[in-house]
Length: 330
Image: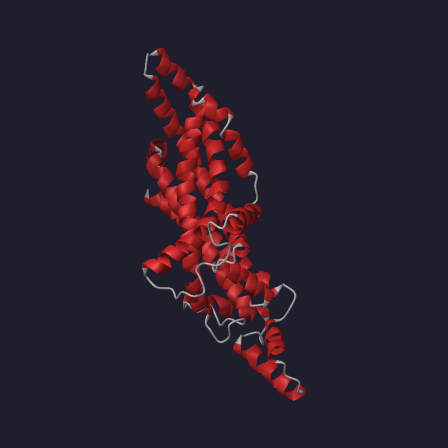
């Protein structure tokens, strides 16, 4: 297990290095200049004052040196926990801006990932043994999994928010309230949370249900299932083994789906004006905020890598064959 985790740690470290390097490069090769963006907001007309301010901000943000020095300086600051200063919200540090937005994204992502995975797998298992569900409810799963997150979010905001008026269509809480651990604020925040959560949950739920249904059918037709039935094993026991074996590819699929649902969360936050990382990235793009943009992407990269590592370890714990192969290799 130690050797396995060691190899995985090296692989994820290399992935982190490449991902962060690309993350650093993307904003700098985008059109636009963050310093000019700041000067445009300042509306400075005097050429000398404008030149002095341009030189000052270039040195402040470290943009007055060659790119290779900026790259090395970025890694040095990163290991010190310094992600720079936001151009859009100058002079607020990027870390402080991210800490305000990250909780909103986590509140959306974690329940959507976990609940859709559990509920989708359970529903798919039921559909595999129920002809009624397979012919009626499961086609809806095909429709859901083919629906873009953003489009479903627009439909939910229009149908349940604007037309029905059941839930607020935008924001994370009412502007009249101040964030606090009170019943009034928590209930209001929950009402604003429902529609963004549903848009993520329903799309992911459809994919997991279809995958589990197909895997259960495959496992029930496998040789070991036929052998168990020939021995007179109860149908319930055969289905239990089929479900356990079908769960293994679904655990692997969870690691592959993390990036997709994270991207869906960013688009959903933009649709509902939810103040998470998605809205933050959009504002960073509009304001040419290199440092905020690379800080938001850095958090996403770290989150996805950690989640994939947890899934890899969980796969070893769940699948005894993997442990046997590891012991044989040792």
